[in-house]
Amino acid sequence: MDKPYVVGMDMGGTNTVFGIVDARGNVVAKSAVKTAVHSDVHLYVEDLYNELMPLIDSVGGISKIRGIGVGAPNGNYYTGNIEYAPNLPWKGVIPFAKMLEEKFEIPAALTNDANAAAYGEMTYGAARGMKNFIMITLGTGVGSGIIIDGKVVYGHDGFAGELGHTNVVRENGRQCGCGRKGCLEAYASATGVSRTAREILTSTNKDSLLRTIPVDSITSKDVYDAAVEGDEVAQEIFNFTGKLLGEAFADFVAFSAPEAIILFGGLSKAGDLILKPVMENMEKNILNLWKGKVRVMFSELKEADAAILGASALVWEF
Image (cartoon, rainbow, N blue to C red; front, side, top):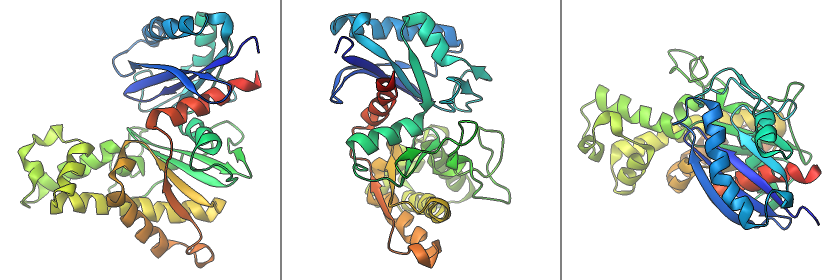
């Protein structure tokens, strides 16, 4: 193969991780840049170029690279554009695949970051052999990749599967970054967990280890650490988050009948703290047809590699 490598790129709201991937799915080199610090997307692309080219040179140069695959928030597979992504510093429609092609002078393809993670999980991870599953990414936001009959669901415009923006709190819901109120993402993301902590701590006098941290600085990791220590407020936060996720999953099952729902991203590291309330509330609310049939599982891939591998899979079709 004269072009034995591809680039896979996982763009998050905070960081972008990218790697050189061979035909067997090995990530042979990897690095990262900060996403959020670039208010100008052109400067971001320049930073990417400066970080990525040494990796490309280490495997023989740009002539050995078949193309670049990108998983990005609100990435449209059909157009190659990032469109109105609420968690990125650049607003509107960004012709990102075209920008990469012009900068690197190789082909580029783009999809939603959660769809990319789903591709990676189906090829290399917990979803190997599955043809029907939902990938849920619990990071800065809540993303989802829906696989039905072995294919990613894109819909007519490329944006099918925005499950993080289904409405889970109809009355007095939290403001979401998308502009609406009450979205799942506003509650079940890592940032949503932090918001729940702030609400409880400022509206009650409950004792908590979290009160040793400035309230505006509390992270989901802080909540996890406190919960592991037996902190009741922190455990209450995970139970609340898991309840909303489980209720939402019961609804998601109704339209796609997945074999499994696979959790990926920083919040999934909470393990049983999040899994138990999710399972309990999903089973409590699911239609009888599917009770006991749908597994909730954690990703088997390294956190960054699922999206890198999935995004890289887009390129082998070139």
